[in-house]
Image (cartoon, rainbow, N blue to C red; front, side, top):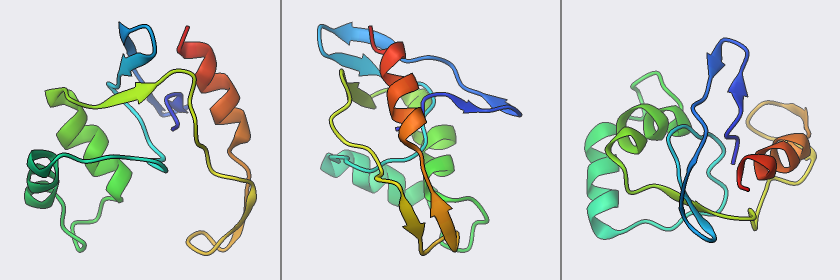
Length: 105
């Protein structure tokens, strides 16, 4: 996950919950995720395909502030560098993985 944000949207860092679990405050790039039934229902009530926001931003603004979103430490999955069919160019987010893991200490 991207826990670093971008220049115009600085993210709040994750908060330690236990030895290998951190509560997420801000995060994009939900590549490996598990949902509870309650979580799915809440997300579906907040997300609209025509709403103008991408999925990760809906989670960051509407779901994460209420709690219940966690990340394992160290991270176990990230997006491999390669051609993005969404963006139409080559993306490499490996630095977000390595820099994000530094927040999980």
